[in-house]
Length: 287
Image (cartoon, rainbow, N blue to C red):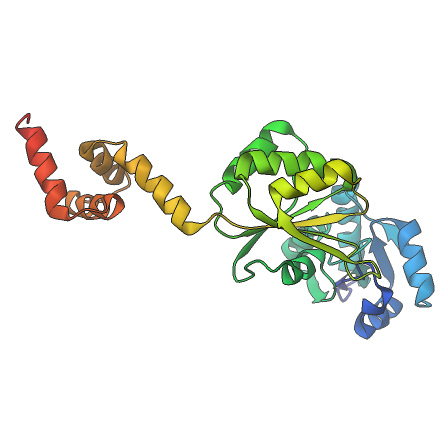
C-alpha cells in the first residue's frame, strides 16, 4: 500500500518564559500525531499548560539513533511528528540533528517553527560584536578533544558562544582564561525569566566573582573574539622568526609560484618585494 509521507516539525519551546511559546507551535503540537521530546516529564508540564493532548514519546541523547530510525519509519507511513526539546530550538546543540539528517536522507519533509533560542538571545544582550560569531554549545568532557577545541578558540576572531552548567562553570572559566587571556565576556543566566542576569565583565574578573559567589542556573557565555591587530602582530613575529627562504618555501608548498610567494612574504613581513629579492641575493652569494 502506498502511504503519503508525514512531516517532521521542529518546534521551538520557551527557554524560561512560557509567554514566548508561539501560537503556531501550539497549533502544530495539537495537530500532529506524535510529539517526540527530550524528557516526557518536563514536556508534560508544557503541553498541560497549553491544553495539548497529543501523545508523547521520548527522544534524547541516549536513544537518538535507534529512536530516530523508529520515527523515520512512522513518518514514512504518514505520521506527522513534532520534535521539541526541554527548552529552545531542536537540532541546535541537540540530538535532533540526527533525526533531521535521517529524514533528509529518506526524503521526508522537515520544516522549522522558529522561536526562542538561548545562544542568539544571549548574543543580542551581550554588548559584544554580533556581526560574526561561532557557537560551540557545550564543550566536550573528553580532555583531549576539549584541549583541541580550546586551542582553536585562542585565535578565533569571531565572538564565541558556549553553554555551561553551574557545577562546571568555575572550571570552564579557569580554562578559558588560561587559554584566551583576559577577554571581555557576558555571562548570561535565567534568560527571559523574572530574574534574568547579564554579567558583562572580563574572564579574570569573572573568576574572582565566582570564587565568592556560587553559580546557580544554566549559563550562556558570550566571549570576545581575538583582537585582529594583536593576531596580526603575533603572526608577523612568527614570520620574522623564519628566514626569507623558509618563508618562500612555506608558500610554495601551498602551490604559490615563486613570484606569488615573494609578494605574499613581503606583505607578511611589512617590507617591499625588492627587499625580499635583495635578501635572497645576499644568501645566494653567502653574504
